[in-house]
Length: 284
Ligand code: AAT
Image (tube, rainbow, N blue to C red):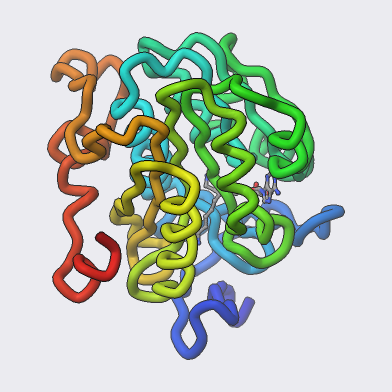
């Protein structure tokens, strides 16, 4: 903190940084896994920061949480049982629990402190933990998958960046484990960095996914407070004929309102897979 301004700096995107003005430090603590901070800010509402990296802001968290949830859910013909890895703020659980076909959600978050702090300071996301569909475990997502076979229709990896506890979630073995834990026709969707700052990470994650799944693709959403203003996702499917960019389930306007969707709709779904020329062929 310099003159009440916080700057997000990380070796993953050297030489440039995003900053915001802090009104109040609500929480600042080193957990067993990472430094956990929550700020109240002048223009972004409340902000969760882990090891110096912005995880979500009250202003734009919905675009990330809705996209990482509804891209895979709406590509699946009947996503009854869903696994969320990470997502300790509760935002993805909040979105997944809205989906009419989802009956059961299991979530595995490694850091109990993130859950506790989110319940206290970020109730607009932690409301997701109140879902009756949800069973929450504290533990390592990688280890959890080692003990679960053919159980889930969709696996969403809402992971922090590959520094610290999330490193294993970006390895090829993780995609092997996810594949084994899916039911027939299953789909995975993982946070996978951006084409602007992390092209190496995007290509390696997509390659691992392609090696394990007969169909794989990359999509992105705009999130102004993430590095480069966007975030990407790698999707993999056991169904080789899947068409990722056409949702199987299209929400009506009434459903959008009832589900309080602020970013995701069926046009956004299709657009999320449209890539700029300089990466279109590289990532196809
Ligand atoms: N909902 C958007 C916020 C996140 S949080 C990512 C979560 O993943 C954190 O709570 C972290 O504790 C958890 N996590 C990290 N490693 C593991 C693991 N091995 N098993 C289970 N949970 C884990 C995502 C922010 C993206 C930031 C982009 N720059």
